[in-house]
Length: 391
Image (cartoon, rainbow, N blue to C red):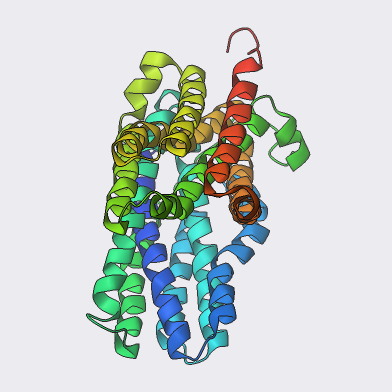
């Protein structure tokens, strides 16, 4: 088994995932503007937005299984990065809505491939004791990329009003940004990484029955949808409480910064408090913060709750990545991580529909309560299951 270059288990997936998120979150608004330029109505804009997610959902499990079977673990993120370059070029040159939708779907697929490849890279080349550090730093970099992408699009699409030239420039710049992603993995594409003996072809049902995997998927979905609900409904709650959009924007920024901080500190926090105790505390603590926001929607209270809750919510994604990676043998880790990602995507599609129905009947605060129930149930499930001896 070839050992990875020193530090490569961290900086390669960190740089690759971060740049990919910049590209994705710059292309998304640029694609909406491009659709409007091409005469899209609101329904078609919705199709463009959905095109980023639908195809990745369909191929997540096969891509994860492929990443798990390959001994050259750089192949999946390398090919995905090359596809990302091509997709951005197609988007830059698209002159029809069909061409634009195809480009967006390919961007979504290639983003999925890079992220699964990056997660597989850490899970198969890093020491198990460093999983929290690796996944924590990677997701912190992704959060930074998700913030930088829209800023890039805002500057390039048009200084005042969007222009076709500015939209095209955004896609071309994203293609350029994807080149280093390919280079990061191309430099080690021929390197082999062996895996412990095991059944790499085990079915997905077998993976779900592995102790801890299904719980991690459920916790991950509950945490991620909590962030989505905060982003979508805090402005509505703020409007009802008389809080200005500028203040709401700063509140969400505090949440994001706090989450990034917790991810950067996840390695030492995990060593100090333990993986499972940290996961349970983060989920249940975040639930309490949501209760406070729903019950006392005053600016000072919301700022404080989001600072604490953001710190706790930020740990959920990397901790559940670690939980899946630790629970499974090397050849099944990529498939397990793909199932976790698929669970996230399904929850992200279903939760807004449920939230909208609940809010229309019981009001905005009730949406927070429903999310609290989801967090609390997943946290209690995680806390209640007794670990086998020796774990």
